[in-house]
Image 1 (cartoon, one colour):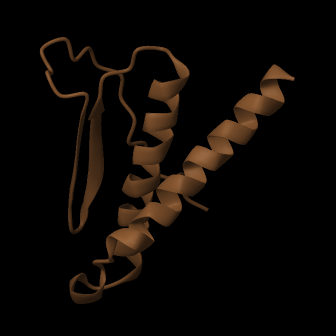
Image 2: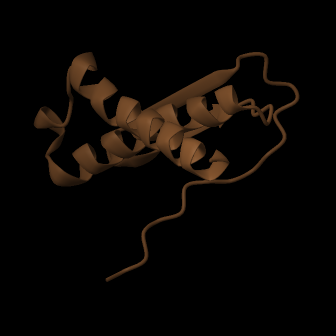
Image 3: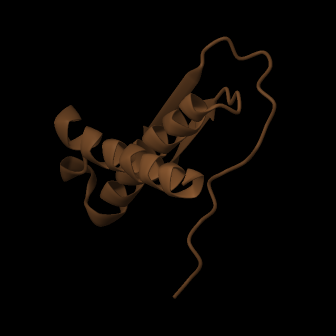
Length: 95
């Protein structure tokens, strides 16, 4: 099985005034620019947004452009699942 693509990169975003910038285009991997502050809220936000990013990536790979779009309700399923998994993992690590 081929190794999955690596989409993460750590960069200093001191000049970024927004706390989050995300985007995707069909057949191009998604990207996230997030100000990370080291607290749980930042970790949860990253998990949530990577849920959106990976959902978009997998939808684009599995479907042609005309059917790759999805409603916001469906988009929130993957991101909310990532948040729940992050929460469960954090609780397990802290107990």
